[in-house]
Length: 373
Image (cartoon, rainbow, N blue to C red; front, side, top):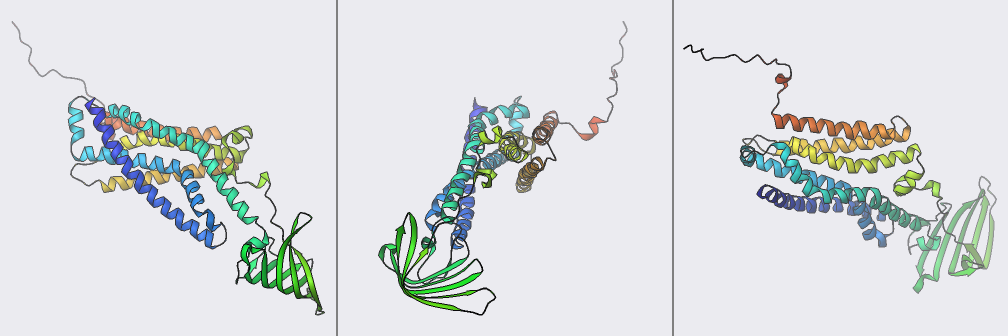
């Protein structure tokens, strides 16, 4: 009981501290990236906090896996450093005996990682994609800011208004430049207002002038008007086939086992399998020399995490392209990593050396003389 309770307490403290640090770092990076997208017009400034929250939920499997991995490695390395492992080994506890307390501590985290990668990851991506689409499909009038030139959603018109009235139902000093069906048009007006005509949003211009000419033709048509209507529709809606694969639910991936869907499913299941493997890897690689520092060992462990996750991403692409089968990737990558980790753990548990595998054990010889009576 003392063995397990002491392990759990230290693991909980290390896991909590690592989790807070990683969340702070990742959310800071997400904030900077989201603010850049908002400044570039990709997302709405009002949705920055929501997008940050959804992005944080989507990255939860990676954050929890790395936090758990670092917490276990740092705790076990500290025990090696302070010679606590020697005490436990002397009391009859082998290295494999640490697997029990590690998995008892890790199983709630592993469960959250599995649920997050299978359900929360696609849901958060879907919510983020819907907010981006709504912002991209907003009407042309909604895109306009006073004193700024703004391109329409279709990309064939440019709007400019001097100032708008309260509620954005009317504006003054309006400029519209458009190119459509081989004709270039410039429209200016002193004032304008928004009306809905037959269910279509229209910008009604007042007291203006319209200049029109065909592209490549020098002839110019000039007309004055007292009132002129311009349609201001939203962008086209994206169809289901154009949705990002990351937004599809796990159930839909299973129901439609195309290579592209199987690649995404392999990544989601792989996130859960990798988290289990990292528990074994942490125990196998945590051994350090008590006289040496722990920093080099921790760097190597983080490097192994980066390599493993990058190979998972490569494997997703290989499955999508049909280079590797879905089951083959899971067996070769995650099953192979598990087998290597178990071998390294058994090697440290039995204290095997490379020369012992090839050295032949000589027969036992009696060194005591025979006593005759």
